[in-house]
Image 1 (cartoon, rainbow, N blue to C red):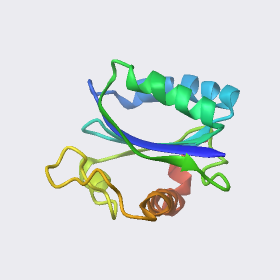
Image 2 (cartoon, helix red, strand yellow):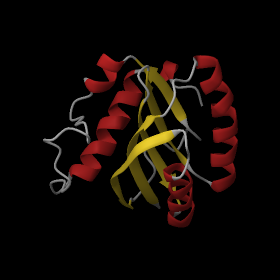
Image 3 (cartoon, rainbow, N blue to C red):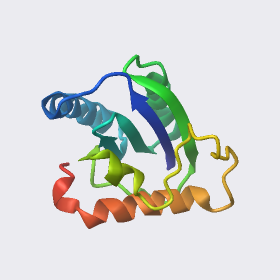
Length: 145
């Protein structure tokens, strides 16, 4: 099992209706690939996503995302083997947040900020995943499957 966490910024604002339409397609695609995860999207277009599954499928999906014209400033925050899925119940869990809520996530650092350190401390990878899982568990009713 493999995971990848990235952040990016949408190149255009998406309405809730547009995101719901995209989610139908993205979830079907993820189910076909055996990929699970979580997508957080702010009203200002900030994105954090966790992808879990087989390494070829996750890396292939991330390559598509990196070249998708709807994303800019795509930065891989963490990647590597995991013992088990943390988001296995969601083909793509989703939550739309206001910008303040997005940036108030404990441990969130803006990769575009001059203080961002590209080398994460030991254990930061699993800490990030558990932080996102804790956030998702705090509002499970708001994360449609």
